[in-house]
Image 1: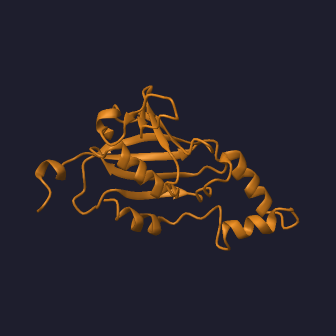
Image 2: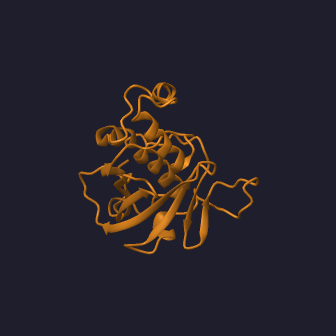
Image 3: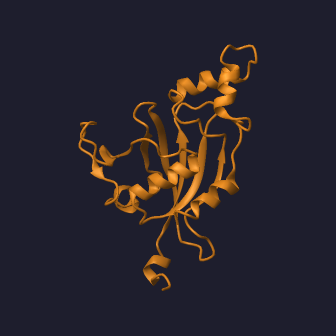
Length: 189
């Protein structure tokens, strides 16, 4: 069954997400339908950033917390599966926070850059641009990642061999794979 007229005309949100305190900056620009649930936005962010969705997450939008309920966390959280992006966010230039992994505390700034009409030839979500590789899971947050980057640049560092093995031969902190990201996004669509 073809999509309804309303679904075909759903406004598109162009978003820039930046991993806070990353240096050099790790960011992505992508587009999603405005009626995307915050849960699905979480899945999209996992793909565009390069995370593996091993941990809890939350959005903080205008002081309201959205995510999955976790009684151990102890904060009132609205269900991200029931909240839509276009209902939670007020227009262009709005900013909010996405936190992934409450242990490593990966904090992201999410900016709604533009709200656009859909293009009939584009399959959403789609990643448009970005820079630098996502840090590996469970590396100790932004400060731990900084230490990892310093160690792998110095073959004399006592952790060099162990970190190189853990990261894998092909790890390049400057790598951004737009084609690979968009291929993975097709499974979310």
